[in-house]
Structures are given as C-alpha cells and as structure tokens.
Image 1 (cartoon, rainbow, N blue to C red):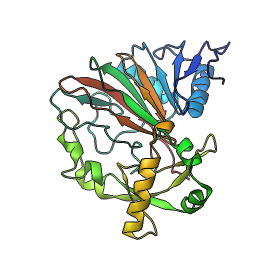
Image 2 (cartoon, rainbow, N blue to C red):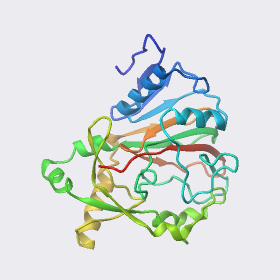
Image 3 (cartoon, rainbow, N blue to C red):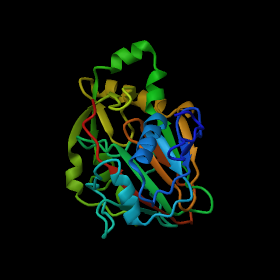
Length: 286
C-alpha cells in the first residue's frame, strides 16, 4: 500500500504522518459493518505503519468492541478494573486534579503477560482543550539503527518482565482516582521474552524491552543488566523513531504492541481526559 493510496475497492485513504511510523486512515466509518476486504486493508496498513489514526468516528462501546473483534479475540486487563458493562473495555480517565498519569512513560502494553496483547485500540471520548497528545516509537527502526556488534550481543538474550513496578501494592499506578487497580499480589510474577522480537506477520526484527515492565536481562549481573537496559530504554525512543498524535473527540488510534512503544502525555493539568481502551490478544513473542 503506497503512503497516499486510496484503494479502488474499499475507498480507504492512508496518509503517513512521519518518516518513522504512523498513518491517518480516512474514508471509513468504523461503526459500520465493514467488509472482510476493508478489514484486510486496515490490517495491511496496521502492519506496515505500526500505528493507525482515524478521525471523526462516532463509536459506542459496543461498536468499538465489535471493531476490535474483527482483528482477534479481545483481552481483559489482569490488574485494572474494567467498565462494569463491558469487561473487555477500560475507561482511562484522568481527572483535573489527578497527579498520576495512567499510560505515562514509554512502555509497551502488558509485556508482563506470557502472551502479551497483539494491539491496543484507544478511542477519545473527552479530551482537554490543549495537550494530552500520545507519542509512539517504532521498535523495528530502533533495532535497525543499532550496530552489527550490538545486534549480535542482543540476539540470544532474554529479558524479564513484571507488572510489579506499576501494579504491585504501593506502585504509582494506584495513585490515580479514576483508574482502579485490583489483585496487587499477582503483580509479582516474572515472565521472560526475547530482547529482540521477530514480528509474526512482517518478519522484521525489533527491540522488545520497555522501561515500565522490563526488570532485568537473563544471564547478566545486575549492574550489567541495568547498564544495558538503560541504553536500550533511551535508544528505543529517540526522536527519529517517533511520531506524535493530537487527539480530538471521536479520534481512534490502534497500535501494534509487537513493534511499538507509546507514551501518553500529561500536560493538561486542571482538565479532564476520558479515553476508552480495548486490547487484542496476542501470542508468545519469538
């Protein structure tokens, strides 16, 4: 799919938003009963551009969930209380006086799971007058930019991931009023994933560590692990690997957790932000 192509059969238009990743998709109503061909076009763009943005959508929770299910089975979050009517959906609300920012800091969603989610779909219900953008970083591009020597070092390594830093008792995530967490005792589980992940659809390699949930590298001394992760966390989100999205009511973003990190900015103190998130189940990284 070329960067600005509109397909003759589906009417979709896909326009890149940066050199690294991200594209705006227009010409589609996500609340409609989309054809299999249209879903396939969106999926192709999703794999190619890593994060897709849709403007001027009008979605109920049921319609958002139905759209998400076209890409796979939906997941439920093990530590965040879901919407009481829709277990697959989380209302991500930042109140005007909230200090903690849910989704703040660079991260890849739920890498603490043995089978992390394939992707996330976030819909804007209420946004601040200004601020509240989300940043995204392409982990394929971050890997490609490494030296051959560093790639050889990283290829055989595995990293430990845990929900503990965010969801264990006393973690920062519990300080927001609108996001309710549960089961903090279960946050101590450790899982292992490759430091370099191969994307199951594109076959491309990318970094698969993040500052929120990656807690160590298998086989290295603590100080060695800390130094290597500090470098990777910084390198993975350099400006040249990123794009930025400014939300409007009715905007929707869907991003590939197999190749993307993201960061929700909290630069709108005194204003309210309400987003709805669903996630698509994934497989064990390889």
